[in-house]
Image 1 (cartoon, rainbow, N blue to C red):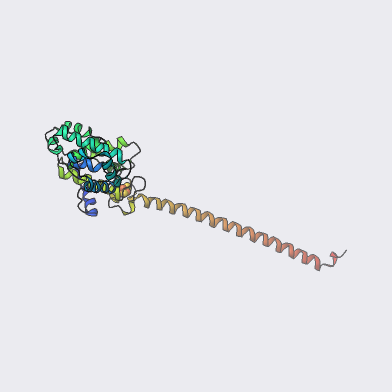
Image 2: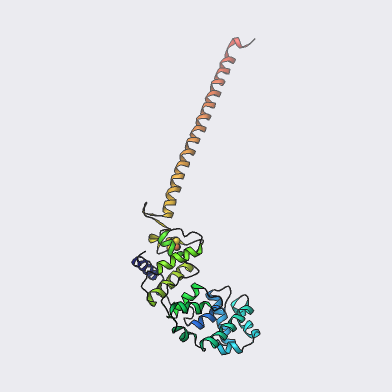
Length: 286
Ligand code: SF4
């Protein structure tokens, strides 16, 4: 898929949502700490845990290293479940940043080539390929084609239609598409933010709000070029045809019922006339 088509999709999203800025910290160390401040991870929960941690303890490696697990656990409760486990992870991250990266993760990572950069990030707890790509991109360490891991299906739906149910295949397809964008931080950060926001606001996994979507007429899941219509218009047409057929059947059934009633009334009328005639006839008295 050529980059101009994706760029045009992103332009449409940007006209609709406006220019988006990163919500999470972009510094790699701060991101790792923020990410473990909430569970299940969401911006709201991570923000709450993050605010509480900064207020109660601080986030510098030395502050986290010297705080007791009990104090960290108490501070992280604001971010949701398993605070003790998250407290242990924060201590591990802080200790590694101190011992392996000299207390400054960003500048240590900036000296690594892309492959080693990914490897180093993936060694932190809870970070896989999507997380490593995202951190490297937003920290402006390497312009990798990072895919929003919560909604890789958005691009696949728009370009190819139904995404299927195989997450790794969907993720890989989205990444191949994003890789066709210019390898600049601005282009790829913009794509990540817009796709991620669209997946959260309208293009939801099980029930996308297509009726309100600015990409309706560009989306392969929604627009059928054979009929030049949106899929819900096709559905409505189908419903109209079914309704017309059903109405015709009902009309025919009503006509047949009326005809039968008429015949029965006619039969009764004939019988009644025959009886009257019989009663009126002198020969009927025997
Ligand atoms: S039209 Fe529907 S499926 Fe397509 S991008 Fe918009 S919300 Fe997603």
